[in-house]
Length: 206
Image (cartoon, rainbow, N blue to C red; front, side, top):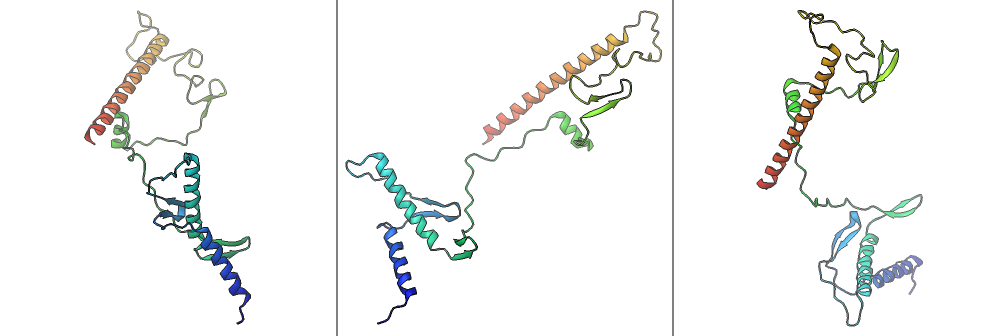
């Protein structure tokens, strides 16, 4: 009886594969795409066996089952050798629920209603013709409005007599700026409180 070399190689490969498979029922759940094997059975420890040895034996057993599944996949020859095409992985569920949309501030609601869009492509610096320098558009080094350094003259408003007890226009502008900053801060705090209340109501409704 003649036996070809290919049959001998196939028999040897089948023998090696069968010897690598543990002697237990393969009732595992597989996610080949993520190279994961799930064992829902409790970990059984032999008498006198440490927890580490038991975990190592169980991991080796599951790894052998997983490798047997990979070996059974269709082989694909490539320039670097024989490979297998792994199937699409399963979509894993999220641990936590999808975060809810952040509530809009009053300005964002107003801008959406009026169709106002933010220009995110504006350059960081602008050229100041009075000083002849490039200034920051935002921040402490920006070109401020109505200061003696950049605006030594402020045009009087109609109907205001600057020579009869009118307030210093520079002081008035500084006070108006402080009032604007204070108002913006209070509006920011109100928006944060409103967002916290909305988030708290969402958690209560779940």
